[in-house]
Amino acid sequence: MTAPVLLLTPGPTPIQADAQAALQKPMLGHMDPAVFALNTRVQHNLRTLYGAGERAFTALLAGTGSLGMDAGFANLLEKGDEVVVCANGSFGYRMADMAERYGAKVTLVEAPVGRAVLLEDVEKAMRGEPKMLAVVHGETSTGVLNPAPEIAALARGKSTLVTVDAVTTVGMMPFHMLEWGIDYSYTGSQKCLSAPPGVAPIAVSQRALESFAGRKTKAPLWYADFQGLRDYWDDHAYHHTVPVQLHYALDAALEYALLEGLENRALRVKKLTVAILETLGDIGFSPFVERPEERLPTVLAVRLPRGVDDAKVRAELRERGISITGGLGATSGLIWRLGLMGESARPEHYLRFMRTLGEILGIRALEGKLEEHLGAVVA
Ligand SMILES: *Cc1c(COP(=O)(O)O)cnc(C)c1O
Image (cartoon, rainbow, N blue to C red; front, side, top):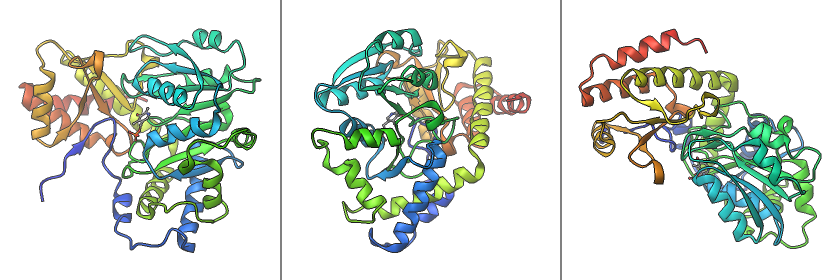
């Protein structure tokens, strides 16, 4: 067997050990009582993960994070509905694309690459009472953190449903769906929870369920229809066959995350991000996102110093067993995106990264620098 590749990408992440072991469990049917018991635990733990409150509906969709995104628009929008979508990177634009495919009238709130969406721009777009306001919390394509709680607050007192893409944040950063007034949220199993890809944990508020129940037309996506999902997850009736092995693995990863503690996880990534930025800063890298409060700690975007050949150095890293990601579109060749979700955010992984990067660039003691910075960080 070839040596495993260390994944320091913005997803997938290294699989958490208990989740990896859970994949070996023997197959059970999707209607087996033991699977329903496991599903119930997952639902309960997801309410905790999202801070969704007791009345929220939670489930795993049999697909990746994008299915979570798709399902929200499919279930909560009808043709002609007005939707405000914040877009400052590729996932925001993906949201807008999906909403349009379901016949919604989309108003975009854009921001320049590398900047967060501005509250006053969202406020202006919200002058009416749109059916939905949608925002990506952590924009993976640029490493920008949007102020999701403040944006959600702009919908308070309105009938507008708030959708927040929590793919790069929930499980690794503070996330409080009920308190922030969020109606629909989703993530992907391979991001902050470090389970294998293939399931999308979702959370739906009571208000969103009521809105869904009041639809004039059937939801156009049968596979992820909220009622069909509730039939299976809450009432244990067949809807479609679920990927039971992926449920085992997700359950194990989720139990692990809650045991570690969500606050501890947030602290773990924050400390490591600060130390990495300082270490790379010493050798000429700089943060791509200028404002510290707009930096997404779980996807660290750094600008390359002059003289560092993006493709060449990344290929050499990969040859030595480390995978990182470059920029997209406008930032291609200019930045690296270092993944710090879930199991990626371990000091030992980044010590290895620094050692290897130092070897490639001919810089001595880079690993020791990270160690020093880690020792000095007071998070
Ligand atoms: C990865 C990602 C998605 C899509 O998830 P897939 O699992 O690739 O389908 C959506 N939104 C954000 C912010 C992401 O980082």
